[in-house]
Image (cartoon, rainbow, N blue to C red):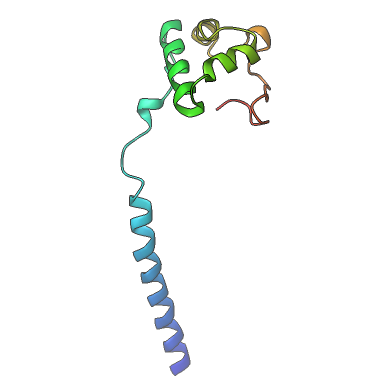
Length: 107
């Protein structure tokens, strides 16, 4: 009976220590949303173009727009127009199945 009580208390202590560790780790990520980085789903071609340029530069670094244009065979403006009209990139091969960036497709 004593063994059962000790193991139960040990489990309770481990659970409390686990929670004490997990709460600060989770809250360290902040409570801000990523909505400011969300694409303009129902946006115009101009909004899509601005978002893509900003997104590529922020996440892929300087020169990302030029790299993407050279690999896609179309300009960012054309990509923005395509996104505004179709909701996805379809022209010039599009990004349907595109895996030119390290095999992972688009970001």
